[in-house]
Image 1 (tube, rainbow, N blue to C red):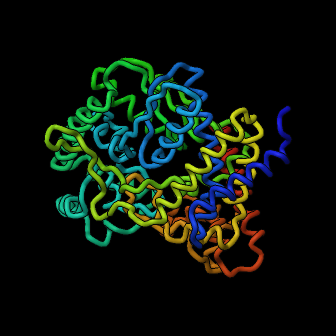
Image 2: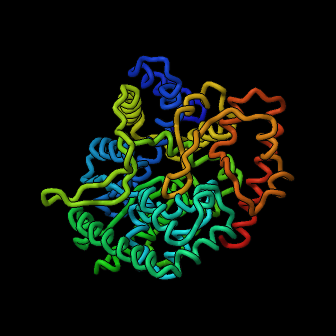
Length: 441
C-alpha cells in the first residue's frame, strides 16, 4: 500500500531532520540544505537515473558547476539500484562553449557576444569572448570608445550600436575570430579526452533553463566531425528547443508548457546557489603535460570552508536514508512535496532562510562581470520598482541594479506590506510568461 501524502511528508521530514544532524552548526544554509536542497536534488537525480535506465543510456555527463553534487547523488543511487551507469563530470560554462562557437556562428555569434543583459557593460560583453579587462579596454581604445562609456550598464539600443562598431572594426573582427578558433582547438582536445567524440550517445545532466548549452555543444561536436545522438536531462526548461537538430530535451520540474504558476513560483537562481560547486567558473581549456584541464575564472579561489563539506554530508546522508527507507517511493508524491517546499523557499522565505544566501554573489550573464548579492535589503524606493506599473514604465531601459531573487530581498528588508510587492511580482511574471508563451518564445 502506497503512503499517503501526509505520511510521505512526515517521513520526508524525519529524513531531513536526521540528515541535518550530520552537520552540527548554526549556519542557516545548513538548515536550508537539509529542508530544501536535499529533497529537491534527490528527487531530480532519482528521475535522472530512472530515465537513463529506461532509455538504455550507460553514460551521463554532468555539467559544471550545477552538476557537482548531482553526479555524486546519481552515482549513489545507481549503485544502490545495481545499475551500470557511468557518471562523468564535465567542466563547462556558457562562456567556455560560446567562445569557440563564435567563429562558427556568423552574424548570430556577434549577436550573442553583444546580447543585452541586466547590468551588462561594453567591457562585460567583450569578456564573454574570454578577454581580460585589460584586453577589452585595449580594443575599446582602438575603437575610439571613451572610458566612461565602457563600464556603465547599456540599454538594448546602446549595446546594438556598440556591436556594429566593434563588428566593423577590422582589427577587432580578425582578433575575435582568431581567439575563437584557438578556443575551438583547445575545446576539441578536451572533448576528445572526455569521450565526447567516441560515437557513443552524449547525454547531459544540468539544471537547464534555456537549453543553450546543449545547442552550443551540438554545434561544436558537429564541426568536430561527430555524428550521433545528443540528449539533455534538465531540472527545468523555460523555453522550447530552438531546433530539432540540437537533440532531445527532457525536463523534470517544469517545461515551457507547464502551469504558469509552477514556473512563476520558482527561482532558478536560488537552485543554482544551492548546487554551488567548490571550484570557480570554467572559462576555457588548456593542455598541460599532455592532459587537457579547465581554465578557471581569474581571481577566484576554490571553496575550502568546512561549510561546504557539511552541506555535502547532509545531501549524501539524505540520499542514503531515502534509498534505504523508501526504495519504492511513489515519484508523483515525492515531486508534489518537493514542489511545495521549493515554492515556499523561492516565493515566501523566512528572513533566516533568505539570509542563508546573503553571501552568495550572482550574475545572469555569461561573463559574470556584474555580480551582485543574491539577497540584499531593499529601500522602499527600490521595492517600488517591483510594482506592475513601474515595471511597465521601465521596459527597454537599462537596469543598473538587477535583482536576482526579489522575494529573498523582500524577506530581509524592513518594509511594510510585503505581500503587496509579492502580489505585483506574481502579476508581472505571470503576464511575462503568458506573453512569451503566446509568442512562441
